[in-house]
Image 1 (cartoon, rainbow, N blue to C red):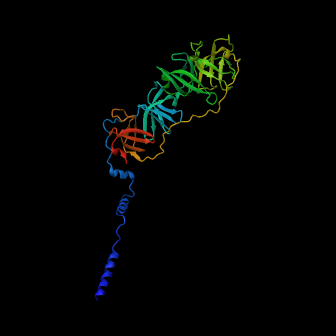
Image 2: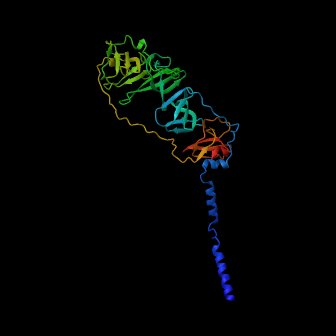
Image 3: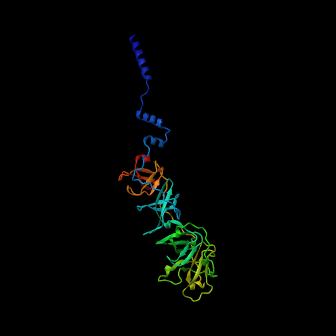
Length: 384
Protein backbone atom coordinates (compact mmCIF):
# COMPACT_ATOMS: atom_id res chain seq x y z
CA UNK A 1 0.00 0.00 0.00
CA UNK A 2 2.78 2.39 0.90
CA UNK A 3 4.58 1.48 -2.30
CA UNK A 4 1.45 2.29 -4.36
CA UNK A 5 1.02 5.68 -2.70
CA UNK A 6 4.73 6.51 -3.26
CA UNK A 7 4.48 5.54 -6.92
CA UNK A 8 1.40 7.74 -7.38
CA UNK A 9 3.18 10.75 -5.78
CA UNK A 10 6.26 10.34 -8.06
CA UNK A 11 4.01 10.16 -11.12
CA UNK A 12 2.15 13.38 -10.20
CA UNK A 13 5.44 15.22 -9.52
CA UNK A 14 6.78 14.18 -12.94
CA UNK A 15 3.64 15.43 -14.66
CA UNK A 16 3.90 18.84 -12.92
CA UNK A 17 7.52 19.30 -14.02
CA UNK A 18 6.72 18.40 -17.62
CA UNK A 19 4.06 21.14 -17.78
CA UNK A 20 6.50 23.99 -16.84
CA UNK A 21 7.84 26.11 -19.84
CA UNK A 22 11.48 25.82 -20.76
CA UNK A 23 13.64 28.71 -19.43
CA UNK A 24 14.97 31.11 -22.14
CA UNK A 25 18.34 30.06 -23.48
CA UNK A 26 19.47 33.73 -24.15
CA UNK A 27 17.46 36.29 -22.14
CA UNK A 28 19.38 39.28 -23.59
CA UNK A 29 18.74 38.24 -27.19
CA UNK A 30 15.04 37.69 -26.50
CA UNK A 31 14.73 41.18 -25.00
CA UNK A 32 16.54 42.70 -28.00
CA UNK A 33 14.18 40.92 -30.41
CA UNK A 34 11.20 42.27 -28.51
CA UNK A 35 12.60 45.86 -28.64
CA UNK A 36 13.23 45.51 -32.37
CA UNK A 37 9.62 44.46 -32.91
CA UNK A 38 8.36 47.57 -31.08
CA UNK A 39 10.47 49.92 -33.26
CA UNK A 40 9.97 48.08 -36.54
CA UNK A 41 8.48 50.29 -39.25
CA UNK A 42 9.72 53.60 -37.74
CA UNK A 43 11.57 55.85 -40.21
CA UNK A 44 15.22 56.46 -39.21
CA UNK A 45 14.63 60.24 -39.27
CA UNK A 46 11.57 59.85 -37.04
CA UNK A 47 13.58 57.66 -34.72
CA UNK A 48 16.29 60.32 -34.54
CA UNK A 49 13.65 62.95 -33.82
CA UNK A 50 12.60 60.95 -30.78
CA UNK A 51 16.13 61.39 -29.47
CA UNK A 52 16.86 64.98 -30.63
CA UNK A 53 15.08 68.27 -30.11
CA UNK A 54 14.32 71.00 -32.61
CA UNK A 55 17.42 72.71 -34.08
CA UNK A 56 18.17 75.82 -31.98
CA UNK A 57 18.81 79.24 -33.53
CA UNK A 58 22.29 79.96 -34.88
CA UNK A 59 24.74 81.63 -32.49
CA UNK A 60 25.04 85.41 -32.76
CA UNK A 61 28.55 85.26 -34.25
CA UNK A 62 27.39 83.03 -37.14
CA UNK A 63 26.35 85.52 -39.82
CA UNK A 64 23.96 84.23 -42.46
CA UNK A 65 25.36 84.96 -45.94
CA UNK A 66 23.15 86.30 -48.70
CA UNK A 67 23.50 85.70 -52.41
CA UNK A 68 25.00 88.72 -54.12
CA UNK A 69 23.23 89.92 -57.23
CA UNK A 70 24.48 88.03 -60.24
CA UNK A 71 26.03 90.08 -63.04
CA UNK A 72 25.52 87.12 -65.37
CA UNK A 73 25.81 83.37 -65.69
CA UNK A 74 29.20 82.11 -66.87
CA UNK A 75 29.91 78.99 -68.94
CA UNK A 76 33.03 76.90 -68.12
CA UNK A 77 35.59 76.07 -70.79
CA UNK A 78 36.14 72.57 -69.39
CA UNK A 79 34.20 70.05 -67.30
CA UNK A 80 36.23 70.63 -64.14
CA UNK A 81 36.62 74.13 -62.67
CA UNK A 82 38.66 75.17 -59.66
CA UNK A 83 37.25 77.68 -57.15
CA UNK A 84 39.68 79.49 -54.87
CA UNK A 85 38.35 80.32 -51.39
CA UNK A 86 39.39 83.32 -49.31
CA UNK A 87 41.91 81.22 -47.35
CA UNK A 88 43.69 80.16 -50.55
CA UNK A 89 42.22 76.65 -50.59
CA UNK A 90 40.98 75.37 -53.93
CA UNK A 91 37.94 73.18 -54.58
CA UNK A 92 37.41 71.28 -57.82
CA UNK A 93 33.88 71.05 -59.19
CA UNK A 94 32.53 68.48 -61.61
CA UNK A 95 29.14 69.07 -63.27
CA UNK A 96 26.36 69.67 -62.64
CA UNK A 97 26.87 73.18 -61.29
CA UNK A 98 26.12 76.80 -62.17
CA UNK A 99 28.61 79.68 -62.18
CA UNK A 100 27.38 83.23 -61.53
CA UNK A 101 29.60 86.31 -61.78
CA UNK A 102 29.16 88.49 -58.66
CA UNK A 103 31.91 91.10 -59.07
CA UNK A 104 34.27 92.87 -61.45
CA UNK A 105 37.46 91.29 -62.75
CA UNK A 106 40.52 91.50 -60.52
CA UNK A 107 44.19 91.26 -61.42
CA UNK A 108 46.44 89.21 -59.12
CA UNK A 109 50.07 88.15 -59.13
CA UNK A 110 49.05 84.92 -60.85
CA UNK A 111 46.74 86.44 -63.46
CA UNK A 112 43.17 87.69 -63.73
CA UNK A 113 40.35 86.28 -61.59
CA UNK A 114 36.60 86.75 -61.47
CA UNK A 115 34.53 86.75 -58.25
CA UNK A 116 31.85 84.09 -58.69
CA UNK A 117 29.25 82.03 -56.87
CA UNK A 118 29.07 78.33 -57.70
CA UNK A 119 25.74 76.66 -56.99
CA UNK A 120 25.52 72.89 -56.69
CA UNK A 121 22.55 70.96 -55.34
CA UNK A 122 21.58 72.10 -51.84
CA UNK A 123 24.60 74.35 -51.23
CA UNK A 124 26.54 77.21 -52.78
CA UNK A 125 30.02 78.69 -52.33
CA UNK A 126 31.63 81.92 -53.42
CA UNK A 127 35.23 82.67 -54.26
CA UNK A 128 37.45 83.53 -57.22
CA UNK A 129 37.91 81.65 -60.47
CA UNK A 130 40.77 82.07 -62.94
CA UNK A 131 39.42 83.57 -66.14
CA UNK A 132 41.21 81.02 -68.31
CA UNK A 133 38.78 78.40 -66.98
CA UNK A 134 35.64 80.13 -68.22
CA UNK A 135 34.09 81.38 -71.42
CA UNK A 136 33.57 85.13 -71.57
CA UNK A 137 31.35 86.48 -74.33
CA UNK A 138 32.45 89.78 -75.80
CA UNK A 139 29.37 91.72 -76.87
CA UNK A 140 28.66 92.79 -80.42
CA UNK A 141 29.47 96.45 -81.00
CA UNK A 142 32.82 96.28 -79.16
CA UNK A 143 35.84 98.13 -80.53
CA UNK A 144 39.23 96.38 -80.49
CA UNK A 145 42.46 98.33 -79.93
CA UNK A 146 46.13 97.51 -80.39
CA UNK A 147 47.06 99.03 -77.01
CA UNK A 148 45.35 100.77 -74.07
CA UNK A 149 44.16 104.11 -75.49
CA UNK A 150 45.66 102.91 -78.77
CA UNK A 151 44.46 102.89 -82.37
CA UNK A 152 41.32 101.14 -83.57
CA UNK A 153 42.34 97.63 -84.66
CA UNK A 154 39.06 95.78 -85.05
CA UNK A 155 35.33 95.55 -84.47
CA UNK A 156 33.03 92.79 -83.16
CA UNK A 157 29.71 92.48 -85.01
CA UNK A 158 28.48 89.33 -83.19
CA UNK A 159 29.55 87.99 -79.77
CA UNK A 160 32.83 86.07 -79.66
CA UNK A 161 34.30 83.98 -76.85
CA UNK A 162 37.49 85.46 -75.41
CA UNK A 163 40.04 84.75 -72.73
CA UNK A 164 41.27 87.44 -70.34
CA UNK A 165 45.05 87.86 -70.46
CA UNK A 166 45.79 91.07 -68.57
CA UNK A 167 44.06 93.94 -66.79
CA UNK A 168 45.56 97.43 -66.83
CA UNK A 169 43.42 100.00 -65.03
CA UNK A 170 40.37 100.50 -67.29
CA UNK A 171 41.68 98.26 -70.06
CA UNK A 172 41.73 94.48 -70.54
CA UNK A 173 43.85 92.46 -72.93
CA UNK A 174 41.90 89.61 -74.50
CA UNK A 175 42.73 86.62 -76.65
CA UNK A 176 40.39 85.01 -79.17
CA UNK A 177 41.20 81.61 -80.66
CA UNK A 178 40.85 81.05 -84.40
CA UNK A 179 41.28 77.98 -86.58
CA UNK A 180 40.95 75.51 -83.71
CA UNK A 181 41.06 72.39 -85.88
CA UNK A 182 44.03 73.39 -87.98
CA UNK A 183 47.08 75.30 -86.72
CA UNK A 184 45.27 77.48 -84.12
CA UNK A 185 46.17 81.18 -83.97
CA UNK A 186 45.08 83.91 -81.58
CA UNK A 187 43.80 87.43 -82.00
CA UNK A 188 45.32 89.48 -79.15
CA UNK A 189 43.93 92.98 -78.67
CA UNK A 190 42.76 95.38 -75.96
CA UNK A 191 39.21 96.37 -75.04
CA UNK A 192 37.79 98.75 -72.48
CA UNK A 193 36.95 96.98 -69.22
CA UNK A 194 33.43 98.36 -69.41
CA UNK A 195 32.92 96.37 -72.62
CA UNK A 196 33.00 93.15 -70.58
CA UNK A 197 30.23 94.31 -68.26
CA UNK A 198 27.79 96.01 -70.62
CA UNK A 199 24.50 94.53 -71.77
CA UNK A 200 25.08 91.78 -74.32
CA UNK A 201 24.18 92.59 -77.93
CA UNK A 202 23.84 89.81 -80.48
CA UNK A 203 24.26 91.54 -83.84
CA UNK A 204 25.54 94.97 -84.84
CA UNK A 205 26.34 96.32 -88.31
CA UNK A 206 29.97 97.10 -89.13
CA UNK A 207 30.74 100.84 -89.00
CA UNK A 208 31.81 102.66 -92.15
CA UNK A 209 35.52 102.28 -91.47
CA UNK A 210 35.06 98.50 -91.76
CA UNK A 211 32.47 98.42 -94.54
CA UNK A 212 33.03 101.27 -97.02
CA UNK A 213 35.89 102.15 -99.40
CA UNK A 214 37.77 98.95 -98.61
CA UNK A 215 40.60 97.67 -100.84
CA UNK A 216 39.32 95.42 -103.62
CA UNK A 217 42.27 93.02 -104.08
CA UNK A 218 42.27 89.83 -102.06
CA UNK A 219 45.58 88.32 -101.05
CA UNK A 220 46.45 84.88 -102.37
CA UNK A 221 45.26 82.19 -100.00
CA UNK A 222 48.48 80.19 -100.37
CA UNK A 223 50.61 82.88 -98.75
CA UNK A 224 52.85 81.72 -95.87
CA UNK A 225 52.58 82.82 -92.24
CA UNK A 226 52.46 86.59 -91.85
CA UNK A 227 51.71 89.09 -89.11
CA UNK A 228 49.06 91.77 -88.84
CA UNK A 229 50.29 94.81 -86.90
CA UNK A 230 48.30 97.46 -85.11
CA UNK A 231 50.63 100.28 -86.22
CA UNK A 232 51.96 101.49 -89.55
CA UNK A 233 55.45 101.93 -88.17
CA UNK A 234 57.24 99.48 -85.92
CA UNK A 235 58.28 100.44 -82.45
CA UNK A 236 61.37 99.42 -80.52
CA UNK A 237 60.05 95.88 -80.35
CA UNK A 238 57.95 95.14 -83.39
CA UNK A 239 56.58 91.94 -81.83
CA UNK A 240 54.66 94.11 -79.36
CA UNK A 241 52.69 95.59 -82.26
CA UNK A 242 51.45 92.22 -83.56
CA UNK A 243 47.73 91.72 -83.06
CA UNK A 244 47.34 88.62 -85.24
CA UNK A 245 49.49 86.01 -87.00
CA UNK A 246 48.00 84.07 -89.87
CA UNK A 247 48.96 80.80 -91.54
CA UNK A 248 46.76 80.80 -94.64
CA UNK A 249 46.31 77.02 -95.05
CA UNK A 250 44.47 77.65 -98.34
CA UNK A 251 41.36 78.47 -96.34
CA UNK A 252 38.79 79.59 -98.91
CA UNK A 253 36.65 81.29 -96.25
CA UNK A 254 39.26 83.83 -95.17
CA UNK A 255 39.05 87.35 -96.52
CA UNK A 256 42.27 89.39 -96.66
CA UNK A 257 42.00 92.67 -98.54
CA UNK A 258 45.05 94.74 -99.57
CA UNK A 259 45.70 97.59 -101.99
CA UNK A 260 45.94 96.86 -105.72
CA UNK A 261 49.26 98.63 -106.04
CA UNK A 262 51.96 98.22 -103.43
CA UNK A 263 54.61 100.88 -103.94
CA UNK A 264 58.03 100.12 -102.53
CA UNK A 265 59.24 96.93 -100.89
CA UNK A 266 59.84 98.17 -97.36
CA UNK A 267 57.49 99.27 -94.67
CA UNK A 268 53.85 98.27 -94.16
CA UNK A 269 50.58 98.63 -96.00
CA UNK A 270 46.95 98.60 -94.87
CA UNK A 271 45.21 95.24 -94.59
CA UNK A 272 41.66 94.18 -93.67
CA UNK A 273 41.06 90.68 -92.36
CA UNK A 274 37.89 88.64 -91.77
CA UNK A 275 38.02 84.95 -90.77
CA UNK A 276 35.16 84.37 -93.24
CA UNK A 277 32.80 86.35 -95.45
CA UNK A 278 30.13 86.39 -92.73
CA UNK A 279 32.61 86.64 -89.84
CA UNK A 280 31.71 87.82 -86.34
CA UNK A 281 34.62 90.28 -86.23
CA UNK A 282 36.97 92.18 -88.51
CA UNK A 283 40.54 93.39 -88.09
CA UNK A 284 41.99 96.59 -89.55
CA UNK A 285 45.77 96.63 -89.37
CA UNK A 286 49.05 96.72 -91.25
CA UNK A 287 51.24 94.09 -92.88
CA UNK A 288 54.71 94.00 -94.43
CA UNK A 289 54.69 95.22 -98.04
CA UNK A 290 56.75 92.32 -99.36
CA UNK A 291 54.07 89.94 -98.08
CA UNK A 292 51.21 92.08 -99.44
CA UNK A 293 52.53 91.75 -103.02
CA UNK A 294 51.47 88.11 -102.97
CA UNK A 295 54.69 86.90 -104.54
CA UNK A 296 55.62 84.57 -101.68
CA UNK A 297 53.81 81.27 -101.36
CA UNK A 298 53.73 78.64 -98.71
CA UNK A 299 51.59 76.30 -96.69
CA UNK A 300 50.99 75.33 -93.09
CA UNK A 301 51.05 71.99 -91.35
CA UNK A 302 47.42 71.35 -90.54
CA UNK A 303 46.92 69.53 -87.24
CA UNK A 304 43.46 68.00 -87.47
CA UNK A 305 43.87 65.66 -84.51
CA UNK A 306 44.58 67.89 -81.52
CA UNK A 307 44.58 65.83 -78.31
CA UNK A 308 41.90 66.83 -75.85
CA UNK A 309 43.11 68.00 -72.48
CA UNK A 310 42.29 65.74 -69.57
CA UNK A 311 40.79 67.22 -66.48
CA UNK A 312 42.17 66.28 -63.10
CA UNK A 313 40.37 66.27 -59.80
CA UNK A 314 36.70 65.67 -59.28
CA UNK A 315 33.86 66.50 -57.01
CA UNK A 316 31.45 63.59 -57.00
CA UNK A 317 28.61 62.55 -54.76
CA UNK A 318 29.33 58.83 -55.14
CA UNK A 319 29.78 57.95 -51.50
CA UNK A 320 27.95 57.00 -48.36
CA UNK A 321 25.81 59.93 -47.21
CA UNK A 322 24.98 58.76 -43.70
CA UNK A 323 24.47 62.19 -42.10
CA UNK A 324 22.09 65.08 -42.74
CA UNK A 325 21.93 68.75 -41.95
CA UNK A 326 18.62 69.60 -40.25
CA UNK A 327 18.61 73.37 -40.67
CA UNK A 328 20.18 75.95 -43.04
CA UNK A 329 23.81 76.46 -41.99
CA UNK A 330 26.44 79.00 -43.07
CA UNK A 331 29.69 77.55 -44.41
CA UNK A 332 33.13 78.79 -43.35
CA UNK A 333 36.57 78.22 -44.84
CA UNK A 334 38.25 78.54 -41.43
CA UNK A 335 37.00 77.73 -37.89
CA UNK A 336 37.14 81.32 -36.61
CA UNK A 337 34.13 83.11 -35.16
CA UNK A 338 35.26 86.47 -36.61
CA UNK A 339 35.51 85.12 -40.17
CA UNK A 340 32.88 85.71 -42.83
CA UNK A 341 30.87 82.81 -44.25
CA UNK A 342 31.64 81.79 -47.82
CA UNK A 343 28.43 79.94 -48.58
CA UNK A 344 25.32 78.20 -47.34
CA UNK A 345 24.02 74.64 -47.12
CA UNK A 346 20.34 73.76 -46.87
CA UNK A 347 18.95 70.66 -45.10
CA UNK A 348 20.41 67.79 -47.10
CA UNK A 349 22.40 64.55 -46.85
CA UNK A 350 26.15 64.85 -46.20
CA UNK A 351 28.98 62.38 -45.71
CA UNK A 352 29.84 63.18 -42.10
CA UNK A 353 29.61 65.81 -39.35
CA UNK A 354 31.48 66.04 -36.06
CA UNK A 355 32.43 68.64 -33.47
CA UNK A 356 35.76 70.27 -34.26
CA UNK A 357 38.15 69.37 -31.47
CA UNK A 358 40.26 72.57 -31.74
CA UNK A 359 37.28 74.91 -31.56
CA UNK A 360 34.12 73.39 -30.07
CA UNK A 361 31.97 76.19 -31.46
CA UNK A 362 32.40 74.68 -34.92
CA UNK A 363 31.52 71.47 -36.64
CA UNK A 364 33.64 70.08 -39.45
CA UNK A 365 31.36 68.63 -42.11
CA UNK A 366 32.19 66.61 -45.19
CA UNK A 367 29.59 67.73 -47.71
CA UNK A 368 30.83 65.38 -50.41
CA UNK A 369 33.83 63.04 -50.48
CA UNK A 370 36.98 65.10 -49.74
CA UNK A 371 35.09 68.40 -49.40
CA UNK A 372 35.38 69.52 -45.78
CA UNK A 373 34.22 72.90 -44.48
CA UNK A 374 33.08 74.36 -41.16
CA UNK A 375 29.66 75.27 -39.76
CA UNK A 376 28.40 76.26 -36.29
CA UNK A 377 28.17 73.22 -34.02
CA UNK A 378 25.18 71.90 -32.13
CA UNK A 379 24.25 68.25 -31.86
CA UNK A 380 20.68 69.06 -32.91
CA UNK A 381 21.87 70.65 -36.16
CA UNK A 382 22.59 67.21 -37.63
CA UNK A 383 21.31 63.66 -38.03
CA UNK A 384 22.14 61.20 -36.57
